[in-house]
Image (tube, rainbow, N blue to C red; front, side, top):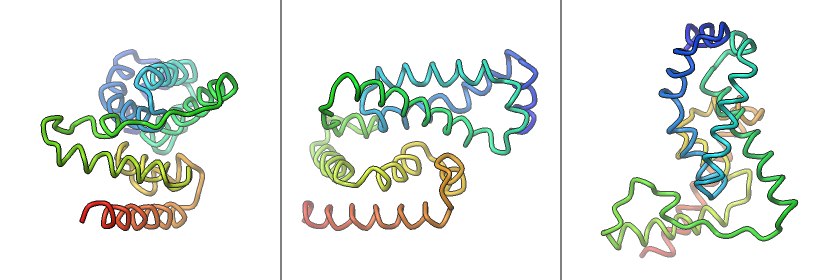
Length: 176
């Protein structure tokens, strides 16, 4: 990815296409989960890529390009959420199908499990939920999550374990 970052910094259009191919799906899935809305995720992904293109010269200095892309996406998502919060206060619960885009809609047991997990995630505080979203839905490592959030890697690991334990207890209670 270092070579890609250097090519991006030089403004190489093909490098931007490669970056898009390498991360757009993962970033978009993370944003859908984070923002609970596909349209907002589309908007934030586009703004993320525009922001990266505008500041392309900075990309040569980035240590971990993938983590940096997620950091920019996270910041853009926060900006959008802030704008939306100022316009409206109530937040709709997100549906299980938004979280589990690869699930089979015909299997009622999978849908039931997805709904319980969605309920469990909505019950986590924002800090724990974000770590799970970045780990599970975005596929980032603890080191990358630490870079994205600016928190120590140990804190990330602890939050992840705590969140999974809370989800495990909920699933055990809800899914005998």
